[in-house]
Length: 340
Image (cartoon, rainbow, N blue to C red; front, side):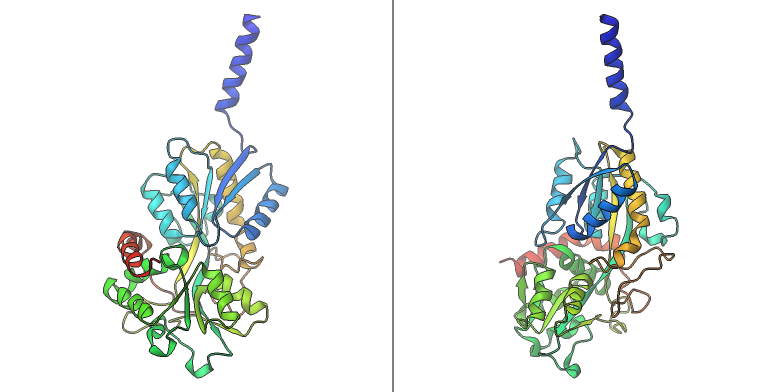
């Protein structure tokens, strides 16, 4: 009897210490659920992985998941963090949230897409764009630069998501990095003076333009294209696509997703297996409602016309690490000027 109990105890210890890649993998995911669910369903159909995703809301995109990861450092519940805010990823990496992992699936990705310490991998990017209502704004008046939005003729006609959150917040910190804090803050003060309309998220900025509530909206390519594809009277403008002489590193801002293994993850081997597979499916995100540009140069898929990648416009030359350094300064400024 005693021997049997000892054997059973040994089996339990062995099972606890030897996790397999086919166990449950928990993913904290900032990608839109309808897009990620389809990718996860494909992975589960083709592999033994059992994926348990947790998502954010549109208005609070990526923020609550970051808070949970920080709160769970002593006892992680998450295996993989799929983020859509690279500056948030960099700040989490600095706090020791991730463990290094270099996926063989990212061998052909550009060098800049990998964290220097190997803690995260960037993939599938979209651009920050302007969506214009073509019924309200004639062709000759349509803005070509972000800085055109401070023109008094747009007073009360512009929509922007809450600038303390999501890609709008990331854009602010990146703008501080590329054009300098003084010029960037002057831009946002110009928007405020112009009576910019603050809406919950990028989706609401895009739909507000397509419905004629606003003439122009600052948003992302995925939300903008949905309105164009739906046949709404809109045009997508890639701001500063030809560059901006006063600030040579300024241009259209492209923001990638990132994916990482959480340090102390319950199932690290399953996490690595999932990351390997998701990175091979980057091309699938060119459509399926995501409309993202793959970073893998070997990926043949591309989002539909008229969406443009960084090879087709003057992309902003952002040092994301330095932009992360400016995050707190940007947030302090944005909260002071735009908190409601």
